[in-house]
Length: 230
Image (cartoon, rainbow, N blue to C red):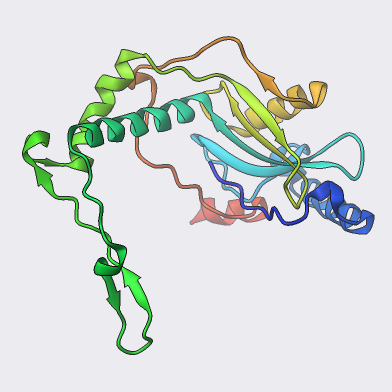
């Protein structure tokens, strides 16, 4: 999950004029996208049926406060933890040699600028003749099915965002549908504070449909119909 924002001057310390202008702009976007998204939030991500993370904005009940949110599913959080553990096991088995960035850099003769080459993923005997990436991927089903890793539904507020109040959350839904996001917003606005569930969650390998990296398409809701027609 990612939500790009400036941490230079927090939203709450911005001028009243800036906060009001940003609030009105966000409110207008939500209104414009209401026929598609339901009227509570806006996003620039294409919301297909199997979205595992999303960034967007929704309004507080009190102007000029609005929330700059980043949500992911508990399944996505679990997947990322398991993948990280698979790589950690690979480094425990075969530590990585420290590389010299200067030695690996290649100088462009025209610009004089240096670029770094991506180091090759070599095979290794301790990986059974596989590369680190291949070996790590093979470990994922085993680690997931051990179910020793726990995730929790939770969300936190962050007051250092420049645009809006930051809100990062992990929620227990299979996918982030429009209905799921709207339901979360209603839940959040009822308490407007940090939350951490006391109920741990864990998944087997089969519980998660897709274990590869998720990349969301960037497209305004107004243009979704054009994307569908193509």
